[in-house]
Image 1 (spheres, rainbow, N blue to C red):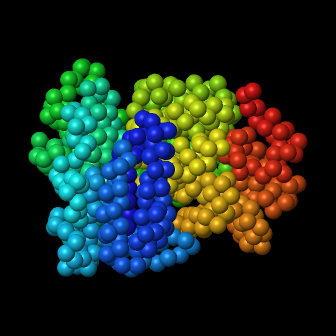
Image 2 (tube, rainbow, N blue to C red):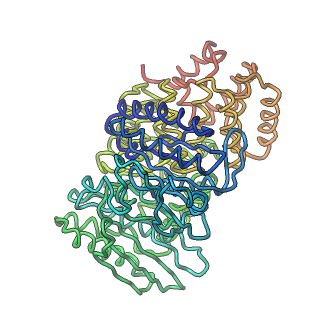
Image 3 (cartoon, one colour):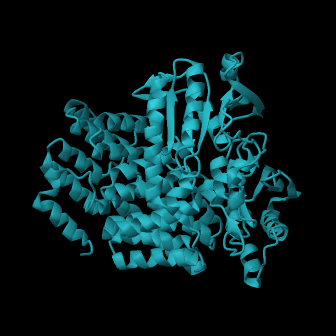
Length: 635
């Protein structure tokens, strides 16, 4: 059984204190009821709860009682999904199709509703005290066969029966608002996903500046990728009244693009078009679709607005495809960052005047150092050069200024320039979530220690991108650094809920458990992280810290040996490895590695001043303060 609080993400961005209070009440309400029906409280995922039960009847009766009990708490409304299927319990967690399907049903359920799968329905169909009604068949994400869905109807007349069409949030939808979903790859070989994503992203970027139109963020809109979703759900979660969706297929130099603009309330197609053109016409197709959106939604266009919509950064379709592939891969994070870096290089080679390609190259290079794939000193000059070249080619772009903000914070330790460039990026594009997120976490939090303002910037990023796992993880890191571990854990778990493979969200959850001295959960979380990340060094170091905190020194030493062996053939960053040695009591060698990190310009060195995961044995040593003094943090 999965439960989720309706509207919690939006409430967090508006009234954090009230949101945390609602979360506390939800926990107090559900735990005893789940226990009453012999349920097992497995874990919380942000504002969601996952539980298992010995019988289907217990699960359904529990869900019904929980929904009834919610009536007594102002503002607490839940969606619940229940599925019966095989699951595997491992390391205090649960896996399997049963978990996935219950989660998908919960996401589709209406406000205050409980939706169940057919296996659940079959078990309770003959029980007189349980009423259900068939809703529809639905193809759920990562589920091959359609799932028949039923709604549980309460016998209590005081509970308003939910309507599968009407959504509570309808009244909050802006009339002139849109989400641009990724275009579906219709190629026979299914190797053009980058083109569908890129086409949608370029259309989104061309209209996001319009003051008369609310445009949902890219990351949040792409959260619905690959799933057959209820467009009313998209409208409700993103607060938009229309959705643009479509498909793309490229064969040789020929391109077919279909696009539909749909009203989320009734599913009515406001506009649709099919384009059969040469690949060279892709820029014109993007312009035509963007202008059609403004016409159908009656958005007032000034001359400068029309100029921005039809602005083309390159006429070279080969460079454009390389750029789209680069963006596609760095958005996946992990080792895909290095793949993205190569594609941006190819885009620049194909068109040396392509400003966006330089901006993408700067971002990918920053991420390659942040994830410790490369030493900062080997990429820092390339980052600066790429970002400055992008600005020389087009000084209206916000992205390269954001890249420079990170560059000056991570590598040059030039705080004045870091702050100036972050603010310039936000000024140029007030809807660029990454700029708020990085400015808040990297500069205001890690460098200045101004955590209240850092949190405010992080909240703004989440308001722009409410379904972004990365933005939730970034805010979790800010709160963790501020010592607000319980709150940080909520955001980290919300990130995991949004993206079960989010590297940063799992890592921050592990760090929060470590700070809260919940060592067993920290160990389990870091074990899962290294499993999904291919034993990434950040995950291994986190597990070393958790093992040492739990007095499991032998296990920790084995992981240290693994990293030493890997250092023969790959870059192992000095800062985190130095901390690992300090956890094991080898303080002198730890400082050798911190010095290595200092000279390598290991970007994470700027986290050390305020970070809770620095062992006391290091922080109390005069050599540590000397290191901070040489970095030159502002007083």
